[in-house]
Image 1 (cartoon, rainbow, N blue to C red):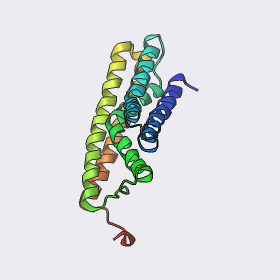
Image 2 (image 1 turned 30 degrees about the vertical axis):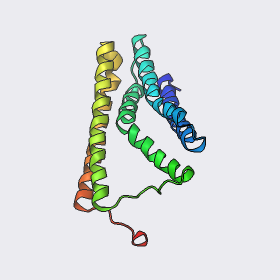
Image 3 (image 1 turned 45 degrees about the vertical axis):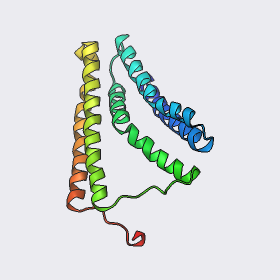
Length: 181
């Protein structure tokens, strides 16, 4: 297995381990400060991944698809991380602290959330593109970073899919199921 892929997998696992441990500390053990500290450790996972990618390339490594995937992962983690943690927090609060049940969105509320996701995707794609550019500039060897160029179209396709999704729900808002009314 490629070293960078292994580090990406470890980063994803680490992100969710910190989230789950933070929420368990907060809601099950009632250790609110420790829970907050564990939740704030999630960006550290991103820094470790970015550092590993930079060190790998600066030590003579040749960029692969997985280096580009790391940039994409970092963009998603930064742009969507708060939303993912908020999603998990709502479910833990409901399950362990008698909080309200998570709300399913329909109609214009769902459409608004789709457009917020377009903004998040724009930010994530921008961050990923910036990291790809940074890696290319740091290595300064087109032969060793050519694989990174293949990620740019992926960012564009991802953005277009998210944009089409939001546009579709703008013209045809998500309907609430009859049983939920």
